[in-house]
Length: 309
Image (cartoon, rainbow, N blue to C red):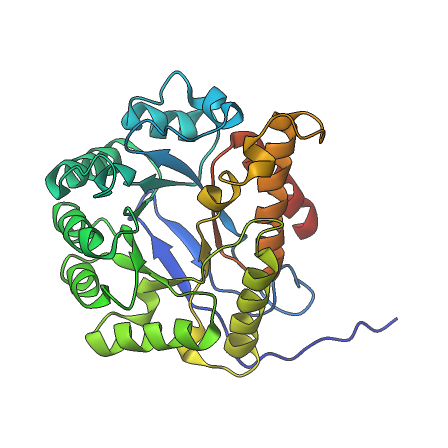
């Protein structure tokens, strides 16, 4: 039987996160996710495990248990993620900088990022507190003190892209461009960053992530449409790898935080909820998945390995 194959005119940029000898490559595919019969797909989706810069106060027990011995020390936490749970990358969530929370200053946050980047053997990506104004100050300082380490910074939005983008360029970092579930807005933000001077191969797209049962179908569709434009229409403004910051979205849901729902064991339910969300995003075409529970990540790695044969 002859297998029908799609002919693609475009290609996703292959981007490098981190620096040698610990760099990681992502993107580079010439066909849709796992369509190995249609084109070259040099890199499987990468999994980054989360590290928080302060003890989280809203995590369910299922998430706390794997990290309970290191949860008050982000450096030990990062090392455990790598040595015990085989993290390909570390995603440092700078939640302590939130003005509505601990409101730690940029110098403290940047100092921690620098220490972790120097002590771990995998690349580091960094998300701020999601406060537009505070993230400008924090991520600009992170870019400065980690000059040349090729750390990806986010979330870069329309309201703060100029300052963070300029800092990323000046200190040789990458950016994660966050847009609100809209193909045209994602493309527009990429164009704004390019016009600022940010190289297109230093941008990853974050299309906003919905968890399983809470909007994942929207995220799936947006990713699929971005890949269609990139691969079949050869639109070079959306030919960047896609990153999904899925862990915070999944683990805030009542289905994974509430034990008594008559839905079986809460820990198993949460692990599967995150794994199914991540795997769906990988099938859609995501290139980097930010995850929290080591067992969820293990499941997703296994499923992706089986798909690749």
